[in-house]
Length: 461
Image 1 (tube, one colour):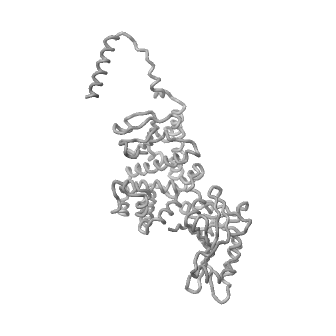
Image 2 (cartoon, rainbow, N blue to C red; image 1 turned 90 degrees about the horizontal axis):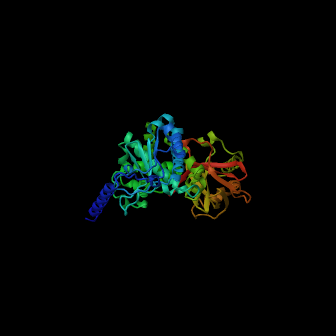
Image 3 (cartoon, rainbow, N blue to C red; image 1 turned 60 degrees about the vertical axis):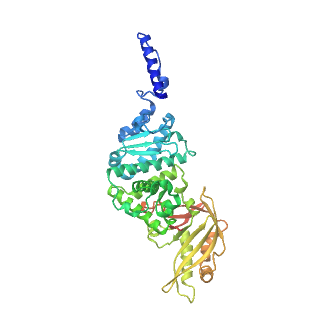
């Protein structure tokens, strides 16, 4: 009754004002309550028109309108100063990669035609998580939380999170136009569970989901797998799959391949798109997961094979090849054993330790010899310094086999652990195809970039 009473009181007051002042003009300036006049063609409006409306027929709705979030949600308007930098993030890291990879026809046809911005996240329930973004009708993406914007570098998470939302929601947009393949849901059939909040990230990971949110329903799983593959890159995805359960790893790999095929049917090379997004993440946002030094601190194996197809196609360092060829010759020439050298690996076992692994055959048998290394890694600069370490075990690769080939491979140990040598870790080789992007990495000698080595990468649990 209280609300009804207030309404009746207000109605009576309005009636009194009207009856007492029929002929009096009210000279009130309402612009103070709506400083952003929708009829004004501001510099911001002009920029949005030239950047989005003219080339892509995209309308950016930033003036507050309850119609765009419904009656049940509580949101706040967007600060005007956050509009252009947020939409620049959309342009640089979202639209431009699609434009480059998918081309103008696809981009103009499928890119959402309406982008709606709100300052806060959307809360239907004070106890629930705020909604960060939505997709609707195959044509609209709504971004919430725009008032959290900060310029780089402090705004790195904001920009990354906008891309997480955008790529997720655009996945829904595409799925509203072209349905999700029917075989996708079967990959994790029996593991979807609502509410998703009851599934921990660890459990979701083990079961083959990129996030706990993905474990709730197959449609969200699809959008999340698209988004996280793009924003964190292939190295992250390979690591996430490798550190899941055996079954989870299989599911994660099947899901990504399903998405690659889905995009192929759209006429888009998903791996090429992923590469373009990662170049933005690395070069603009400075995201650590997009840089090779970060992954050296994880459990990872680099296989270096100068006879591999990638090495043949992209070339190898003459300085490193000289050492590599020497130890190959030496191993093959060890008297009395009949060894055949295969390749070498560097196993990055902890953030401070690694080991050099020599692979060789004797007849039909395959054998390994391991040599411990210490490692000092600076993730910011990418600088790596190796030193001689200790044996990591007492089995044959660490003792018997290592003792037999030690003198033969000593030139490689000397190359890696030279007191004056500092390496720089980076993705290599330069210009590698999108299919292998972030699947190969290497190190070059600081101050001598033509002295380098690289290899294929495999993450270990």
